[in-house]
Image (cartoon, rainbow over all chains, first blue to last red; front, side):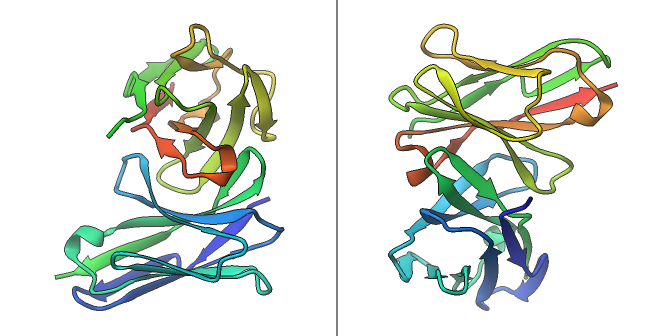
Amino acid sequence: SQQGEEDPQALSIQEGENATMNCSYKTSINNLQWYRQNSGRGLVHLILIRSNEREKHSGRLRVTLDTSKKSSSLLITASRAADTASYFCATGVRDDKIIFGKGTRLHILP
Amino acid sequence: EPEVTQTPSHQVTQMGQEVILRCVPISNHLYFYWYRQILGQKVEFLVSFYNNEISEKSEIFDDQFSVERPDGSNFTLKIRSTKLEDSAMYFCASSDGGANEKLFFGSGTQLSVL
């Protein structure tokens, strides 16, 4: 069964606005990661947050993790056209298994 | 920056044929993975590999699938008798810390089964 579920499935915002994507998961995790995928390309790692962390920043990215609610959010501030992509959350559930969600398709409008 | 390379980028095959997808992980990584993605949808875990053996596999990874690290640099995925539903983008990934660290992905092999 799918571990992570992103919300919304698709998001369109104006350039310069902030984009927020959410991820919910079902089981205990070691960490939660966010990846980006441009159309038809490989996935690129954005940020990893461990289960004992609550918030993490990297450039224009801010990730939060609430293990009590089994949820995470990814905030992209001051969006740019180049941020148009699909974004996936991925949960490390055991020593050697990382499960991806269905992704959020983000479209930045000029 | 080091990268994971996959060949071929596109593979077309007839149903029932065997295919081998090839990957060269990042040289100092010890954990290797195969994922697949159908039509830009969800990214599905197939298998993880560490210390020359499978460490985890999904229900998708049945007896038609096998993985091998034949020479210390390549990591291959073999599908023995392809089915139409095997058509997908197959991604290889590697990591230096397993599921506790980030994965580095290749650009993928688009497999089309006719």
